[in-house]
Length: 413
Image (tube, rainbow, N blue to C red):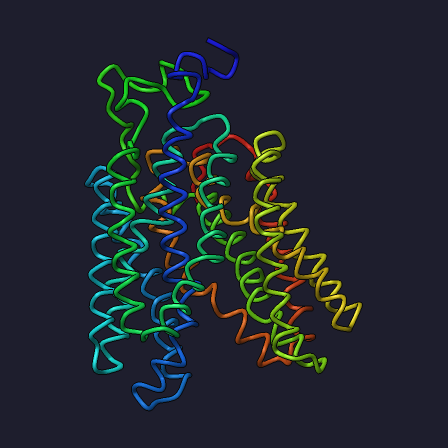
């Protein structure tokens, strides 16, 4: 066995965990591409079809965020009771049924119901919970790199799936686009069936970088903590609060960069180039973080990502003007690879890989319900004053997360 343990776990020179990362890549891409990044494509055609305002249609996206937060608790419990691969398959089927239902709605309340409950629950089971849990199970060493490469799927989903939706809507209608989304969910199912495996132990292997003595002779996972014991641990709240503060700022900056650019008198087309800039640097950043994360540690990776957003906020405050927004967009986009994988990564590090869906599920209401309010806050504050608040939030995140690089311990409040 090599120092990192890879040799005894490989077949044909490739550790199977990296094949599992491919399945997680597709899971992240299909969920974030179809649910998170494509919603905006449907707003105008649905508003026109139901003769209502775009604000009322956008309320469905708010309900989706609330639904994923609240239902994340139950998604985590569900994944503890079934094999992760079966959970992923069930989640994809639920999402397919949800999108199929959206293609035949005849009232706005049906859109709210399908997005806020059906698609919210199904997507949470698939990614981030299911996909992150599966990847974390396969890696002890290089877990940060593996999770980063899996979340790279979100960037490709952002680049490809909204464009597919727009193309279908322009050529046919929004109902057909939702049917195509249902088909996409079904097309990912063979990928999960063929290559997704819950744990390395299921193939007679050990996690990458793990040891043979990591589990009992029975091969069973260690007993999980009771929810009340998890909620009493200080690191549960440290991870949740530090991630919440940072991801709220990150999502706000992503959402308001274009509207803020329009205040400088540029056209919508010119402002949209900032989104392209963020997308390109998000991909570059994820590859970079995948290279560095396991060398410098999860907490330090997180600090670099926080620092990139902090630099963007300072730039937005100190250097007014449209050209500076490209630098700020590059900084924000580049930070994605250091933010998105850190939530599951730090949980697996502090609580153990087997507890990841349980702990992420318990943390979901705190994070997912609140994280989307940064953008409306920024617009209500007319942008620049909000950036000062964001700077304070990021500094707070650095302070709260300062001890998360230490080995886990029994930390009770």
